[in-house]
Each structure stands twice: as C-alpha cells, then as structure tokens.
Length: 431
Image (cartoon, rainbow, N blue to C red; front, side, top):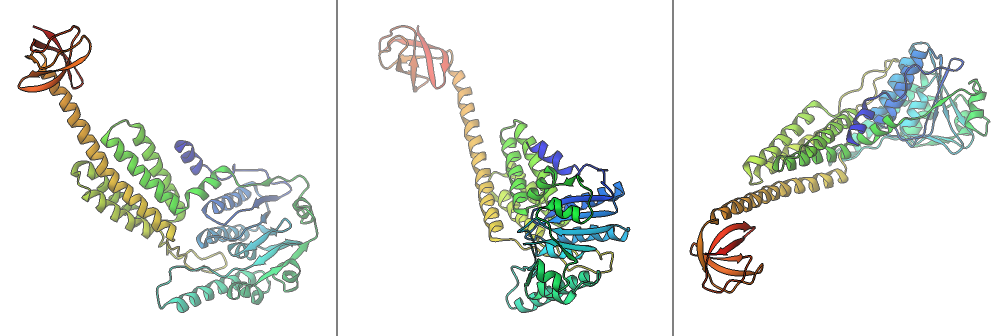
C-alpha cells in the first residue's frame, strides 16, 4: 500500500499529450484548492500547451483553499495566456460557487462565465494565530494586499476591479445576474447542464472533460502537514521497533512512510531547515536504542517538534505573475489539531522507546536464565517429595529446591540425576 501510494504521488496528474478537441482543452475542478488540485490544474495546462490547444476551459466549483496553491494555479494560467492561449473559467453547474481562492483564479482568466444559480466572491483572507496586539495591523495588511491582487487581476481584463475588490475587503458575493450587471464576469450561459454550457461557449460536441486523477487526490491527502507529521513519526517508531527486534519488514514500511511524509511536506512547501531538524530529531530518537533512559528520545522529540512547527512558517514570497503582479506571501499556522497530534505522538515515542528497551532486557534475561538451566544437566540431588510418573514434585539439587518430573514413580529421599530441562523444570531419573 505504501509503495503504491509513493508511485502514485510522483506520476503526472494527467496523461501527457491528451488530444485537444477543436483546439479546446476542458477540465472540471470540484474540490478545495490545495497542492493536489494545483498539481492537477497546472499539469493540465501544461498538457494543453503540449497538445497545441488555443482555448482552455476550467469548469469550477470550489469553496477556496490555501494561498500558495492558488498562486501556483494563477502562475500557470498567466503563462498559458502570455503564450497566446485563451483561458476561460465557467462557474458551474447549477448551485456551484467560486469562493475565496476560486474567485481569484476565475478573475485571472481571459473570460469568466457563470451558469444560472451560481455564486462568486467571499474572498477575504483568513489569518490565524496573529500575535497579541498585532491583530488590526496584520489583518489590514493582508486584506489590503489581497484586495490589490484581486483588483489588479480583474483590471487586467477590463472587468470591474472596484466590485471585485469588495469581494475581498467586504466579503461580498455575487450571484450570476449581479456579477454580470457589475461586470465582475463576462457573461451568463443560459444552459441547464455543463455540457450545454460548454457547447454555448464553442466547445465541440463530445469534447472530453478531464477530471482529477488518483495521483492528484493522493497529493491532496499527503499535503496535509498533520498527516505528513503522523506518517513521519510513525515511520520513525516502526524503524525503532525493528531495531529492538529486527524483522526488516517494519523498517521497510517505516522508510516508505517517511518518504511519503517528505513528499507531502514537499508539496506543502516545507523549508529545508525544517526537514533537516526533523531528521536530526529522528536520529536522536534512534539513539535511544543505545542510551535506554528516555533522554535521547525526549531530546529527539523536542527537536522534531521544532522542525514541524517551522514547516508551517512557509513565508517565501511568490514569484511575480506574467502581468508583473506579486501575490502576497503565504503563511499557514499550526492548528490545535497539530499540537494535539504532536503531543500524543511525542508521548507514544518516549514511553514506547523506554518500554521496548525494558521488554528486550527482560526477554534477554529470560533467555539467559534458560541458558543457565542447561548447566543443571548431570547434577544430582535428593527428592524432597514423592513424585508420580510424568507428574511434578520437588528435589534439592545444588543446594536449591527445584520443580522436577520423571517417567517413573519415585519416593521421597530417592537420589536423582538431572537428564534434561523443560523450561524451569528439571527432568530427572533415579540413581
């Protein structure tokens, strides 16, 4: 399962060089905007360029998503448009919406159309974990930055930047009729189905509509930093268990889990320093195999947690768009769920490492005890109780009392000799 997930996560989101029917390349996106859907859209745009499609149609229905993935999609759209292609966003089907990041993506298109019963807007950025005393300043900066981005995208295509700016600064949303009246979009498609709407936009009948593949969906799952954190620590724990009791199977599974976690962190945009700290933390956790007192495990967990928290501070400034616009930097803060996961896994690893050591120590001492039992073979002593055939009794051998058994009836006081051992029992015979 882990190997399959790894292979799926590195294959392209769509098969390359798909045919473009009549110069149109059509995809449908009905999901949140995240690294997986960004991979899907950007791969599709690259595929359309390879196929020579002059028109790209995105059928969009989304509640929004993270800023970095939105930026990646806008970058790809700008590249396609600067190459001479016409990018069209169709918000559909009936009841669909292009909220938050979806509205920025729509407004970065050459043409925006809506089906009846659809909505666009509600694009105010969400900022969490703002330091005390900086709430107003930070929120104002972010809202101003995203408002400017939205207006610049809209004005670039001659639409109403004032109206789209309100979608950011005031959280306003527009139905199809109001959006057209305010020139937020370029038109309304009066069709009852997506197929009919595509036909009205000039897409040839029967043109294939690409949908998100398994690989992109897997990337969406892995790019959740909480899941990647669990996978990484689970992999570390699996390898550590294997070091205490080698089977190689757990080590392979643990390594695969860690690779999947790294792939997820990569799609999330984790900085190299954070990844390095996580590996240093893992090394200290593995060192617990030698130290045995939990100190190395605790230190490793602390270093690892610092690395995970740095993963969320992805503050790199995005590259300018083709129009020269520089999108706002993306900052994602850890949620209470993240802290809870880290706390639980930290406790499991520290307690687990100490427990595994003590378990191995006890097993080793038991093995040593069984080995010493063999030294009793050949020694003689006296029965201190009667012993029935194949039953147990007691005997004093080597100045110690032992549980013994024999193949014949023997009376108390009989001198016996140890023939073999059975666990902690001695098998004796009369002398």
